[in-house]
Amino acid sequence: MLPIRHTLTRAGTAKYAIASIAALLSVASSLDSASAHSYPQAMDPAPDARLDAAPGHVGITYDSNIVQSGSSMVLLDSTDTPVPTHQDPTSGRQSSVLPIADLTPGPYTVAWTSVSADDGHTAQGFYTFVLNGGPVGIIDGQAQSQAPAADLMATLTVTSAPDGSSLLRADLSNTTGVERVRVQLSRPDLGVDLLDTKSSGDGGWILNNNEVAVPGAWHAQVIVRRTNVVDDAKGDFDFTVDSLTGAPAFASANAANSN
Image 1 (cartoon, rainbow, N blue to C red):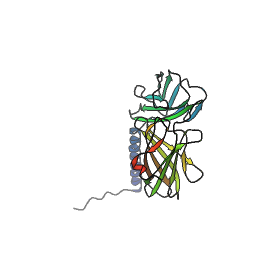
Image 2 (tube, rainbow, N blue to C red):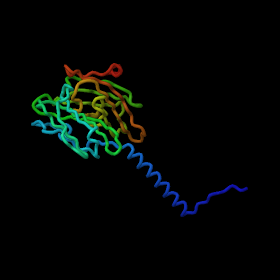
Image 3 (tube, rainbow, N blue to C red):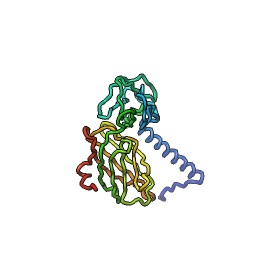
Image 4 (spheres, helix red, strand yellow):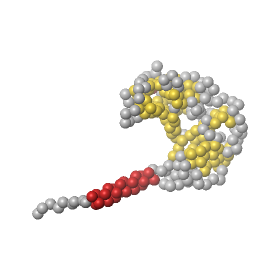
C-alpha cells in the first residue's frame, strides 16, 4: 500500500498559515492575560517630589483595576517606621491613604502592593518623596564594591548627592556597545523597583532620585544592555545603610572585591 501523502494547494497553504498564526496569537494573548499585574500609572505626590507642604492624601492610579481588599499602601518615614494612615474609600484603579499624623520634614517612602482584578496576581514596589525643611536623604558617607556581570566587572558606589539625597553610581570595566544601564533595587518589605540610570558625564551611570530613603538591608542588581549581545549582563550587590549613622556598607561577599 502506498503511503498517504497530504498535499496542500496554494489556497490551502494560505488558510493553514492564517490558522496557525491565529492560534499562536490566541496562545500569546492567553499567556499575556494570565500574567497580568497592576502597576502604578500615576502617583501623587510624584516620585522624588519635593513638597513645601505635607500632602493631604497619598494616592496611586494603577494601569488596570485592582482588588481593593488585597491592595495596600504603607507610608514609611526616614527611620523605616510606618506613618499612621487611614485608607480612603476608592474603587477601580485608585488607591489612596490619608496620613492621620503630622508629617515632619524629611524623606518618605511609599510601599505599595496591588492585586490585579483581572487574575488576582500581586505586584509590589515603592517610591519616595521629600517634605522640605529637613534632611533630604539618609545616607552619610560612601561605600564602593565590585561584582562580575557576565564578561564585565561592574562597580557600584553608594553615597549621597550634593543635596543629601541618595546617589548610586555604576561603572563598567568595558563600556563598548553599552546601550542602557538599569539598576534594580529590592527589599523583601518593599518589593522591586527597576530604574533607568542616566549618564554621569564622565563614563559612569547614576541613579539620583533618592530611591534609598530608609535604612536597613538592600539588594541592587546592575543590568547592562549591549549592542549585538542577546543577554543582558547582570551584577548583584548587597549593601546596608546604618539606621543610626547613615553609613552605607557592602556585604562581605561584595566587600572582598571592593576597591
